[in-house]
Amino acid sequence: MDPPFNEIYKTLLYNQITNTQRDVPEIPFSFSVTAVVEEVELPVIDVSRLIHGAEKEREKCKEEIARASREWGFFQVINHGISMDVLEKMRQEQIRVFREPFDKKSKSEKFSAGSYRWGTPSATCLRQLSWSEAFHVPMTDISNNKDFTTLSSTMEKFASEAEALAYMLAEVLAEKSGQKSSFFKENCVRNTCYLRMNRYPPCPKPSEVYGLMPHTDSDFLTILYQDQVGGLQLIKDDRWIAVKPNPRALIINIGDLFQAWSNGMYKSVEHRVMTNPTVERFSTAYFMCPSYDAVIECSSDCPAYRNFSFREFRQQVQEDVKKLGFKVGLPRFLNHLY
View 1 (cartoon, one colour):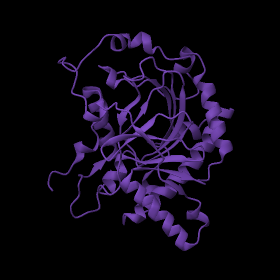
View 2 (cartoon, helix red, strand yellow):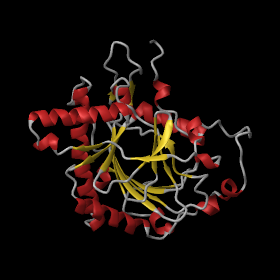
View 3 (cartoon, one colour):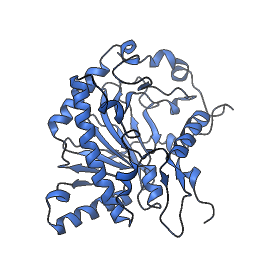
C-alpha cells in the first residue's frame, strides 16, 4: 500500500547527509526549526452570517475574515455550507483509494496521467523530503468524469461546494481590500483550480522528515478538510505553532496570489505538515487558482510586487524547486522600483 519511501530514499534516511556538501543548497532557516511548538486553535468564524445574518452581522463577519487574513493568513470556518455527510464520505472514499496497492494507484486510470504523486523527486537531503502521497486532480477531471462511481460523485459534490465557499470568501476579502470582487468570477476558472487528496503514512524518522515541506500556497485561497490526527503547523510571530484540529471546521488559508494582489495586506503564511511515527493522516484541499494568463496586479501607488501572470509565477516556482529543492515564491517578484 505505502509508496517505496524506504527503498528509494534509503541513502537520505540512513546516511547522514549534511549541508556542508557542495551540491546541497542552503536550506531556508524555517526548514531547520524543529523545537516543540505550542498547539493553538485558529480563529473560528461562523460564515453562515454572510448569508443569513442581518446587515450588521454580515459586516462583522466580513471584518473577522479580513482581520484573520491580515494577522494569521489562516482561519477556520464553521457553518460553511458543506455538510458533514459530504465531508465524511470524502474521507471514506479517499481512504479507499489510498488503500489500493502502490502499483495500482500509481498507474490509476481514475484520474489523468501524473495525478498521483509521492515523495519529493528533487530531494537531496532529509529536510527536502515530503513523506506523503497525493492525488492532484484538476477540477475539469472531476466535472468531465463519466465514471459514475461513489468516488467521482463525492469529489464532484465536495469540489462544487468548496468552490462556492471559496468565491464567497474571496469576494469578501476583495471588498475589504478595496478591490474589484468580480475579479474571481472573471479569472478563476475551473480548468486551473484543483483538488488534492493527501495521505501521510507513518514515518520511521518523524523528528527528521516532514510530511510536507515548509511552503506557501501558490494560489489565491486554499480550503482544507483534515482529519483529527493533527500535524499541520504554521508560522506566527516568527515561531512555529501547531494547529489544533476542529472536527466542525474547515481551514482556510491565503495563498501567494492574494498576498500580491492585496499588496501585502493579506498574508500567505509558511506552513508544513509534521509526520507521525504510528498514525496515518488524511486531508483534502481545494485550491482556487486563476487562468494561466491572468495578471496579478497590485492596486497601489507603491506596489510591493511587479505585475506577473499566473503562468510566469508557476514556471518560476517549478524552476526553483528543480534547481534548489525548495520554492522561493513571492520574493522573486518584489518590485525593486520602490
